[in-house]
Amino acid sequence: MKGSSDIPRDIEKGLSMFRLAVEQNYKAATRDLARYYYSLETEEDNRKALDYYLQYIEYNPKDTDTLLHIGLIYESGLGVPLNIDLARRYYERAAEQDETGMAYNFLGGTYMNDEETESNERKAVHYFQKAIELGNTNAMFRISYYLHNGKGGLQVDIPREIELLTEASKRGNHQATYRLGLLFEDNESGMAQNLELSVKYFQLAADNGILAAINKMGELYLFG
Image (cartoon, rainbow, N blue to C red):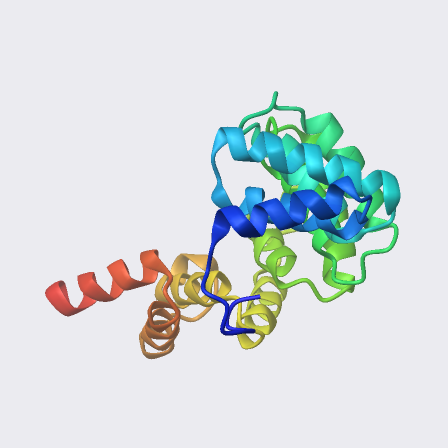
């Protein structure tokens, strides 16, 4: 835990302590080692992370965070064979006790990023809707694509799209903020164009580090 003591940072010594705890069958150490290796984002370290996560989930099969991370590793294919079906199974297990909607959002994402078929679109919408019921702002942002284009069994519904994006933006999802800026900039959406509001959303998204919004504000300052 960063800043929790005056002990100077020593990664090798820290890892040796974790490994010693693992050898003594202290299960939480396998989880902590997994988190460390996962944070390094390399192929070799991802393999180590998966190994430790799989050890920990044997001990604690309902740990939502661990189930989600195992799913993410299989979905990414970084350092391990890409396996979307296996990722989905871990997300489904996580969804059984997840109260944040994150697992359903990840499930929806696997179908959103899959082949663009009506079946996959409907499954994506189904899971995003379940995530939204739990208040997940990423799902609010992602379902906007289907509401905007009338896909996944949904009718085109721009007012509902704006409602969800506004809620997500208020709760700190600034991809949604940027999307709102685009909607109010473009009167092709069927909404009344509002350039003042559009710039407000672009600026807010830019202030919160959204690169597309930063670039957009650069365009506006340069070209008006």
